Length: 137
Image (tube, rainbow, N blue to C red; front, side, top):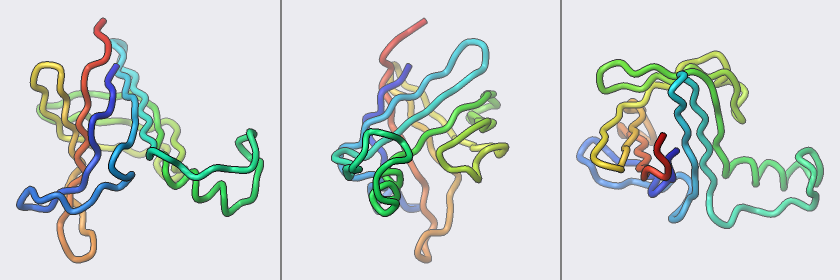
């Protein structure tokens, strides 16, 4: 089990270009020995919804709140320096059935996952999530 330390976007030169879920997001990442994974990341201070139910409250409040949360689960495989997440289900419906590739580095109890580079506002950007081991098997 891993706790999120940082989520940031970086350009080709390693300069931080953004923090997709703000300055202090929280998150939990789980990999099981049997090949399953689950990850969740949330912005700090997420917008409130005027309902305790997942489908309650006004649609605009739900959209604002759910846009500050990422979650998916499925199988995973490690190949070289890549972890391939085979997404079974996700808060983002279009991710189900797809692979999410993450390049990783591990140093002691710190795991860094990087997305493949993508074009954002005319520049190549990589998402970088830094995790700290919270539990061992």
